[in-house]
Image (cartoon, rainbow, N blue to C red; front, top):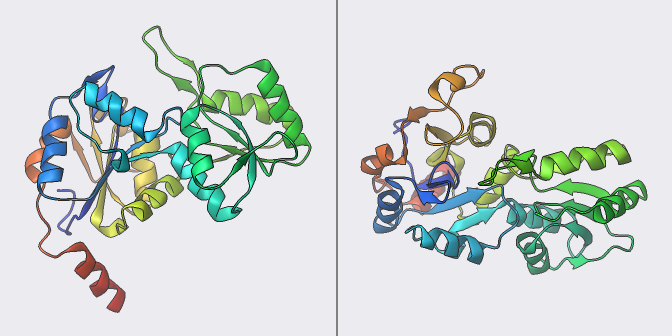
Length: 276
C-alpha cells in the first residue's frame, strides 16, 4: 500500500489501467472481483465524454470486466455536475455525443443555440466546421466556454485523431476566450468522483497510467496515487516530473493482494475525523 493509512475507497482510470487497445489488462478482472468481494467502494474514471455509463459498462463486459454503470464516472458527468452546481437549470450549446448530452439532460439542462449560458465542448468523431463556427460566434456573444477535458489527441487503430483539447484550442484562438476544462488533470474531476461515492481523500487511492493527468490530479485532490506501467507513462518518464506518485507498480495485478477490508468502517472513520 502507498502508506500506512487505512484505505477505504479506490478510483482508477480505465484506458491503460483496466484495458489496453480493446483487451482487458491481466489482473484487471481479479482486481475488480476482489473489490466487489470486499465491498470496497470504487469508481472507474475516464476523460472520454462520448459514451454514456451504460455504453461503457457494455464495452467493458465484452472484455470480461464486470463494472456496474453506477461505478463509472466520466468527464461528461463531472461537467454536468459542475454546471448544475454553478448555474442550476441553465442552457448549453453542445458539441459532443450522447454521453455529454445525456449527462446534461439528467441534471436539468436545456440544449439550445439561442443565447445559451454555456458552450460545452466534448469528444466527437464528427467535428464540423459549421458547429465550430457556431460555437465561436456564441462565445463571442457572451456564452461561457467549457470543455470536458484537455486531451489533444485520441487513439484509434489507424493512429491518433484530434480530440477535445485540439478543437478547444481552435475555438479559443478564434474567439479569444480560454475554456474551463473540467476533466483530468483538473482535481475537480477527482473531487466530484469522491463526492459520488461519499469518500474521503485521505482514505482513497487513485490508480492511473499517466503522470500528467491521473497522478497529478490525484495528488492535487489529496489522494494517494499509484502509477501503473501498462499505459502511457514509463518508469523513466515518471522521473522527469517534479512530483511523484505514492507508488509505482508494473500493473494492476500487483495490487490485487494488497486489497484489504479496512479495520474501521468508512462511516466511523469519517465521524471520528469530523469530531477531531
